[in-house]
Amino acid sequence: MADQTSVLESIVSFFVPVHPDGHKFVAIAALITVAILFFFGLNTLGWLGVIATAYVAYFFRDPERVVPMREGLVVAPADGKISSVETVIPPMELGLGEDRRVRVSIFLSVFDVHINRAPVAGRVAKIIYSPGLFVNAAADKASEDNERNSVILEMPDGQNIAVVQIAGLIARRIVTFVREGDRIGKGERFGLIRFGSRVDVYLPVGKTALVAVGQRAVGGETVIADLLSQETGREYRRI
Image (cartoon, rainbow, N blue to C red; front, side, top):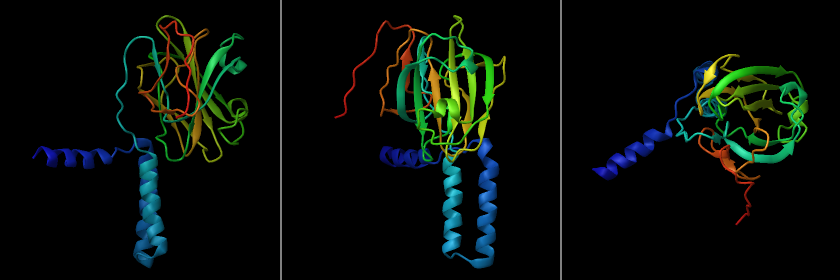
């Protein structure tokens, strides 16, 4: 009986809820597919419609996450691969000053979950939208050249963290669920980027990252920094 329950739970867990922002896209894809099936039957075009509808639902999936709540921990704002960990001067548009900060960049492929989550709890101090290009989001210049939306989070201790949603080659729509003045908890959903993208996190001055380039991040769960730690960094190797 226990084995049967375990199998059932595994099957149920496979079906992840679709975020409300994706409902209209799933509905459009499904209606087109139904029309194709009605007029042409289950031919190659019909199968392509079925696959496309399933993919749209898959893209907008919104799984639950188990968020580490200990004070000082900064969690990944997105699923994807850590594409860059660098110490840089933040773009002037963020208003974070000229002191160098660690920037952690996460690249989201079209197969990753695209819901973005708050890396820390705090108040949305500022939201800055910057129009731009739609070049490869993995490129270094994407942080300055691509269309992007920046959310500055002010933590209870007064420190700021910036989260920047960056459009890419395929991404053409950045969505943000929060407004200036809102308060948000760590790991809570604050936005999404449709169809491939990148998210940058600018840590407070003097803080280091606890992740490495090439590592996979899980939004809301992977710890990318510990603001209470005196650790100066970690060494990594591929095995």
